[in-house]
Image 1 (tube, protein in one colour):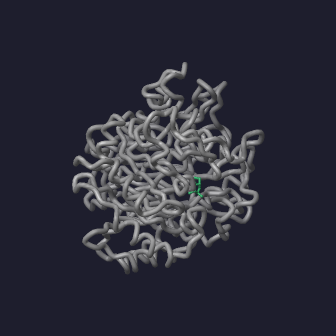
Image 2: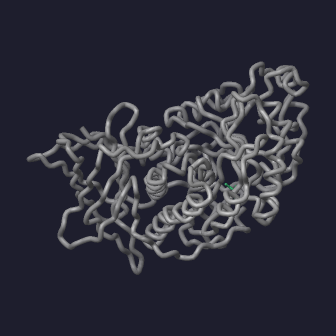
Image 3: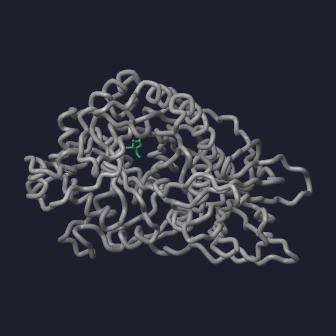
Length: 527
Ligand code: AHR
């Protein structure tokens, strides 16, 4: 929760050294930027769940934004908006985390089953203190993931629930016998068990999830997780709630002290890091109308994700050398000052070209750490924080972040390839500098070699020579996302101001050079 987070320091930016993305080599003036890819040295698989989403009962993220109910005049399937579902399907959402966030630790699953009209009304104390009518519960959530063709990441209530309540939710969802809970699920309309891919044991236990010390949470994790049982085929991966920002103590302590037992699973730790333009929670910076100072500070702050992952993974390499436990950034993205005139508890913000670059820079970082980072969830899917989609009654628009996710679809389950960037210039403004080019390469499931590139410089294009060891490249074909203004965005009146265009380049005299426009994201297939 925002007030409980520590503000982060303007950390030292280390040249982004990506094992499977970009190795930044110091610039030597006048030299051409060049990228070399070694396609003969396949790295880890980029798990599709790196492209996961997050849908919390917060503001209009679930209600209105996605769920309108079966009786709504807005066209819907089982209550879920057809326009929103259609758009999300096109970006191949692999995984959805639900029901929170902070909301999860006050959520009691029994409130969300059975006849909707009889469900209890609660107040959403975390988010605007509005009525929570529990219209979306377990069955509705699984309708959503079924419609999307996505997997489910259910976050359990450790903060205000009991081990019994958590265990019984899992039994309700996954029981395949004739237990009373499995029969209740059948009575409520679902015969076969639900597939729960991941189950989270609490959220932000250091903050809104209970203000705990890591030692206390670890004991509670052991207790709660010991009773999370499901038939083998339906047993989810169990995720412990981890740390945030600069703090590696949670990752370290959890991975050192939680040991899988015969009756207890432990598959991953979570981690949260939000990108604030100023780095200060009390005055984060605006979503639109910012200057170049906040363009560069936002990108610099987001690039910290690389060192934050590295520092945590370094602990895990010691505590879990066999790499059984995954490191899951299950909340990330931009967090701005709320849009004036909106409910401050709803975390509604516009989304500009800058957000698309933030997304792409994070994707390139996640690819670089794909061996350990096997799941992430951007916060959040619709109408909240760095959203894919914004809605206004029956209208909907796709944000620049949506387009970045959609352009990167070929990277889902692709195999990362090592890549080096030579002569990568610094883009500087005032006293701040960041590398101009970020890149990542992978062999996709369609057999093609894909390259993603980000030009962080908002003022000038950059030419990049591409070389794949042992291959003669002829063409690069794909798409580019850019715009005239740093804060270019889509509105309900002009929903297509920012959208990808085509990007094509051909080799000349055996050399393939890509000209990446200023402030752009490019994804191409190299042939
Ligand atoms: O994504 C919004 C909130 O941010 C989540 O509920 C919480 O986990 C985090 O503090």
